[in-house]
Length: 152
Ligand SMILES: Nc1ncnc2c1ncn2[C@@H]1O[C@H](COP(=O)(O)OP(=O)(O)OP(=O)(O)O)[C@@H](O)[C@H]1O
Ligand SMILES: [Mg+2]
Image (cartoon, rainbow, N blue to C red; front, side, top):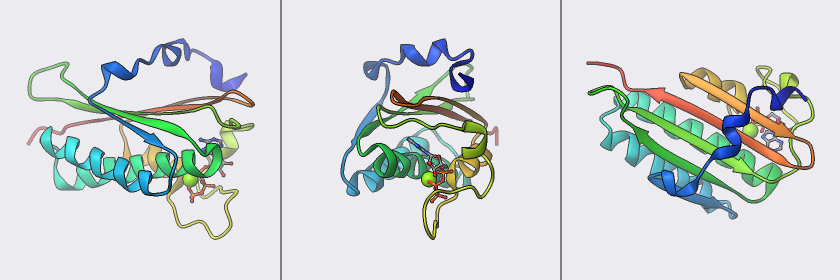
């Protein structure tokens, strides 16, 4: 299945490796996840514009969990591979219904939601530097996104 291709790494995600773990089960948890992401990105020295992009991406992923899977988890961590160039990584995991057609779901403007106001998965992809998704119908969905701090 499309989403499973080369995604072995996504099976190996451990909550204890992350700085922040937010369980999503109520609508308020979306704002909590957004706030946690914002705080972490600020601490890591991201620009205000990039802090907002990361926070927006987290809020979209959390909203999808809440809407389509009801429950799931958002995990966020700072990664320091090189000095002065940290990355924020966000992982969204749920054991919801999964996505049948990933290509369609990632199409810009595609929504199954009436009067959607969000930027959706295609927007999340645009806001971040990297975007990976693995999804299986009846099993769940995992999204991994990263943003690198720009040098300034
Ligand atoms: N975690 C998920 N579990 C199951 N299906 C999902 C999940 N996330 C997204 N989807 C499916 O992928 C589609 C596209 O998601 P996307 O976030 O781009 O748009 P949306 O949620 O429909 O609208 P919005 O623009 O408000 O976010 C959704 O309509 C839904 O069918
Ligand atoms: Mg959405």
